[in-house]
Length: 236
Image (cartoon, rainbow, N blue to C red; front, top):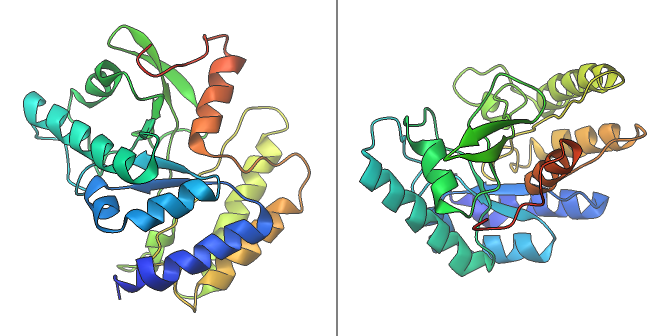
């Protein structure tokens, strides 16, 4: 079942995005990309971003600093080897360590991280003495809810919940900045009984005016410009 994600599910999701001109962020573990490098190559060819999700989807919360620094570097290296450009975004599985954000800033190659879940708009923090963009993530508008009693059974469950969230955020966006994260997994929403839910959701979103389907690095750059921060360059 999980192997069908790269082989079949990825193709279905890729086709759904390409047909609608939607560019997205592929958040990938370094080890997974090392094993399936064509996924990263195809993503870059389609105009998507490849960001880092750790080396082997491990928790960083109890890592010592030296080990965590090495894990970050290893993930970056594997993704850069497959994708070409190194990742500029990072999302740790579960809880971060007290050092994670500082280590990302010290690495010099990260524009943003998504290690936050309590907002619906970007924000800036100081990390290693530099402004660092945080793009919050969401677990409710996420296809993982098809698993472990998460409440999604049919494709329409995913579509309806995510569409309801979108409609609320769209309305709030008339007076405040809002972004929406929709989490997808090749092996989950890419299944034949679920992919229609994603396609219908994308069509419903696209029918609204002034909706921006954006890669996360594009959002981070736009946020820096909006808030008057200098243009970000790796190592800067």
